[in-house]
Image 1 (cartoon, one colour):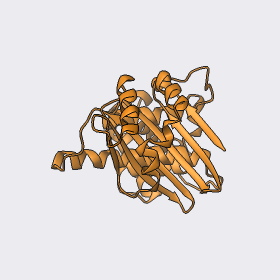
Image 2 (cartoon, one colour):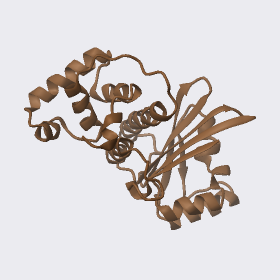
Image 3 (cartoon, rainbow, N blue to C red):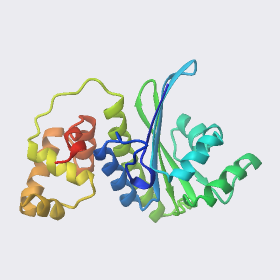
Image 4 (cartoon, one colour):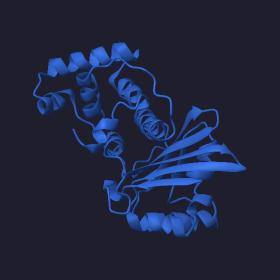
Amino acid sequence: MFRVLVAPDFKITESDPDFPPALLETLKSARAATDSNYVSFWAELGNPDFLSRLIVSTYPAPWLRRYAEKNYASIDPLITAGLHSVEPVIFELANPETPELADFAADALMHEIGAFTIGLPVRIGGNIRAITIFSTDMDLTAETDASTTTMARFHEQADIVSIAVTERFMKTNIPHHTLTEREIEVLYWGSCGKTDQQTADLLGLSRWTVVAHVQSAKAKLGVSNKAAAIASALRLSLFTRFDHGL
């Protein structure tokens, strides 16, 4: 079974009008936080004899069509290796290792998705294999302090995206929470990439009031930073009501 959700170029289109707006904002935030071109997600559930797949993508429509037509998922190293890895998988499109990958890489470069694709495997449950994929022009293959810091940011956003997707479409049990509506609201705007000051301006509050709400949410969720609080809120499906606007 396949479920595919697409928002080409980060836009909800007539071809997939049910793409959740809150999820799209999370993907946009991940793109901005990592300075990426596109963000995708792929998950497989079950065993090889009976697999279900959930795919979310923001690639441009021409590349989405080409990728499907050529069945590139069967050779894409981010899928073939990434779903079974515990380490990041980085594919440099200018240096494919096989003739088959050379054709795939040349096609991807022609569609201008980026010079590198970076896959961050995420482990959600015993029978779920998932990976968040970023297309970027950033070279993270060199082991430097800067690349380590940047990769940590990719990991953080990969977790946020994976939780946003899987908790919305794969989870049935919603745990109890004690967050107030205002605490949920400030975390939602944080998931959209807004700073505390920008959130304050949107809600007509002072920055320190927003900070206080974030601190309270962190304490209730048992986490130590804002990103983890947002991830927990996504896990609890607290942003669902924003899918249709505030």
